[in-house]
Amino acid sequence: MINIYNDINKLEATMRQTDEFKVLKDAVEAVRADEEARVLFANFRDVQMKLQQKQMNGEELLEDELLYAQKTAQLAQSSATILAMLEAEMALSKVIEEVNRILVQPIQSLYDGL
Image (cartoon, rainbow, N blue to C red; front, side):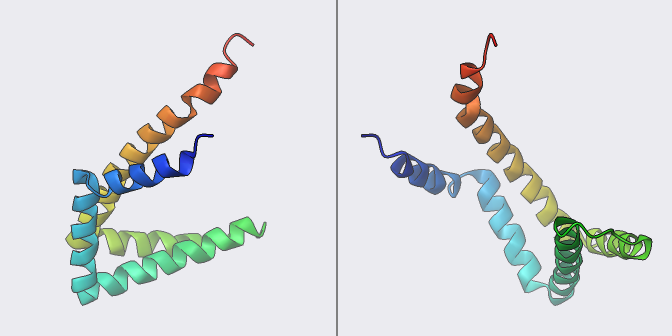
Protein backbone atom coordinates (compact mmCIF):
# COMPACT_ATOMS: atom_id res chain seq x y z
CA MET A 1 0.00 0.00 0.00
CA ILE A 2 1.23 3.49 -0.88
CA ASN A 3 1.76 5.91 1.99
CA ILE A 4 1.10 9.33 0.47
CA TYR A 5 2.13 11.05 3.71
CA ASN A 6 5.77 10.05 3.19
CA ASP A 7 5.75 11.88 -0.13
CA ILE A 8 3.94 14.88 1.32
CA ASN A 9 6.52 15.12 4.10
CA LYS A 10 9.27 15.07 1.45
CA LEU A 11 7.44 17.83 -0.43
CA GLU A 12 7.22 19.88 2.77
CA ALA A 13 10.96 19.51 3.30
CA THR A 14 11.60 20.47 -0.33
CA MET A 15 9.39 23.55 -0.02
CA ARG A 16 11.53 24.76 2.88
CA GLN A 17 14.49 24.72 0.49
CA THR A 18 12.87 26.85 -2.22
CA ASP A 19 14.02 30.39 -2.80
CA GLU A 20 10.46 31.61 -2.22
CA PHE A 21 10.33 30.03 1.24
CA LYS A 22 13.77 31.34 2.17
CA VAL A 23 12.85 34.87 1.08
CA LEU A 24 9.63 34.70 3.12
CA LYS A 25 11.48 33.36 6.15
CA ASP A 26 13.96 36.24 5.97
CA ALA A 27 11.14 38.75 5.49
CA VAL A 28 9.24 37.42 8.51
CA GLU A 29 12.41 37.68 10.59
CA ALA A 30 12.87 41.27 9.42
CA VAL A 31 9.34 42.15 10.58
CA ARG A 32 9.94 40.36 13.87
CA ALA A 33 13.14 42.38 14.40
CA ASP A 34 11.46 45.73 13.64
CA GLU A 35 9.28 46.55 16.66
CA GLU A 36 7.15 49.12 14.83
CA ALA A 37 6.53 46.78 11.89
CA ARG A 38 5.83 43.87 14.25
CA VAL A 39 3.18 45.85 16.14
CA LEU A 40 1.61 47.17 12.91
CA PHE A 41 1.43 43.68 11.44
CA ALA A 42 0.09 42.13 14.65
CA ASN A 43 -2.70 44.73 14.70
CA PHE A 44 -3.43 44.19 11.00
CA ARG A 45 -3.59 40.43 11.48
CA ASP A 46 -5.77 40.74 14.58
CA VAL A 47 -8.29 42.92 12.73
CA GLN A 48 -8.35 40.48 9.80
CA MET A 49 -8.90 37.49 12.07
CA LYS A 50 -11.74 39.19 13.94
CA LEU A 51 -13.53 40.14 10.73
CA GLN A 52 -13.03 36.67 9.31
CA GLN A 53 -14.47 35.13 12.49
CA LYS A 54 -17.52 37.38 12.24
CA GLN A 55 -18.06 36.33 8.63
CA MET A 56 -17.72 32.65 9.53
CA ASN A 57 -20.33 33.16 12.26
CA GLY A 58 -22.69 34.68 9.69
CA GLU A 59 -22.51 38.10 11.30
CA GLU A 60 -22.79 41.21 9.17
CA LEU A 61 -19.67 43.34 8.90
CA LEU A 62 -20.33 46.93 9.82
CA GLU A 63 -19.14 49.78 7.62
CA ASP A 64 -16.96 51.24 10.38
CA GLU A 65 -15.31 47.83 10.88
CA LEU A 66 -14.52 47.63 7.18
CA LEU A 67 -13.14 51.17 7.16
CA TYR A 68 -10.98 50.40 10.19
CA ALA A 69 -9.73 47.22 8.52
CA GLN A 70 -8.90 49.16 5.37
CA LYS A 71 -6.99 51.82 7.34
CA THR A 72 -5.14 49.13 9.29
CA ALA A 73 -4.16 47.43 6.02
CA GLN A 74 -2.97 50.73 4.55
CA LEU A 75 -0.88 51.43 7.64
CA ALA A 76 0.66 47.97 7.54
CA GLN A 77 1.42 48.25 3.83
CA SER A 78 3.06 51.63 4.35
CA SER A 79 5.87 49.76 6.09
CA ALA A 80 8.48 48.65 3.56
CA THR A 81 9.36 45.74 5.85
CA ILE A 82 5.79 44.48 6.00
CA LEU A 83 5.26 45.08 2.29
CA ALA A 84 8.33 42.98 1.48
CA MET A 85 6.97 40.20 3.68
CA LEU A 86 3.54 40.30 2.02
CA GLU A 87 5.14 40.20 -1.44
CA ALA A 88 7.28 37.23 -0.39
CA GLU A 89 4.16 35.51 0.94
CA MET A 90 2.39 36.06 -2.39
CA ALA A 91 5.34 34.57 -4.28
CA LEU A 92 5.28 31.46 -2.08
CA SER A 93 1.49 31.27 -2.47
CA LYS A 94 1.96 31.04 -6.24
CA VAL A 95 4.22 28.02 -5.74
CA ILE A 96 1.64 26.43 -3.44
CA GLU A 97 -1.15 27.11 -5.96
CA GLU A 98 0.88 25.40 -8.68
CA VAL A 99 1.56 22.40 -6.44
CA ASN A 100 -2.14 22.21 -5.61
CA ARG A 101 -3.04 22.39 -9.31
CA ILE A 102 -0.71 19.48 -10.01
CA LEU A 103 -2.05 17.47 -7.06
CA VAL A 104 -5.68 17.77 -8.16
CA GLN A 105 -5.03 16.94 -11.83
CA PRO A 106 -5.76 13.23 -11.34
CA ILE A 107 -9.09 14.08 -9.71
CA GLN A 108 -10.02 16.54 -12.43
CA SER A 109 -9.14 14.03 -15.13
CA LEU A 110 -11.70 11.61 -13.65
CA TYR A 111 -14.43 14.06 -14.63
CA ASP A 112 -13.17 14.70 -18.15
CA GLY A 113 -15.83 13.88 -20.69
CA LEU A 114 -18.78 14.06 -18.29
